[in-house]
View (spheres, rainbow, N blue to C red):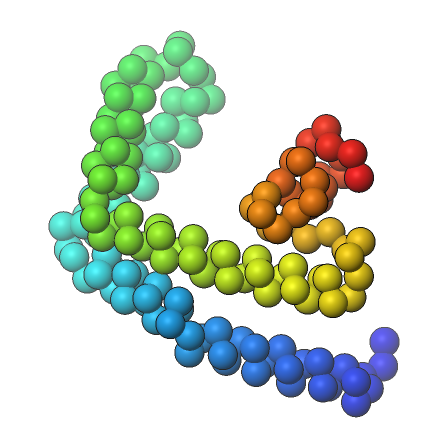
Length: 147
């Protein structure tokens, strides 16, 4: 593929779009939420412990109920996850992540539809797709939707 003026223009416009995203309110809110989570030493410690427990969980999952620590790990992982889920700062970060994802999904759909209505965009959000599976049929029909 040869680099043409048209391709250079597309790359420049993509750079401009990325710059606009990086300076948007939604990204600023994400950075603020991220900073609130990761500047809290106790919360960082809780996240680290949860990640360690996730590793134990994955090990236990390989053996299922036959693993000697199955019940202990299953209970501990649920408790730690619930504590993190209920944390106001973690919840705000997740909402900010979802907001960024929504903006990226909207941009992806807008670009795809500017090319053709037939272009499928796997957004994971049923609002942006015409199919019943909500993934834009990026799963080659395995979602049992008809394309």
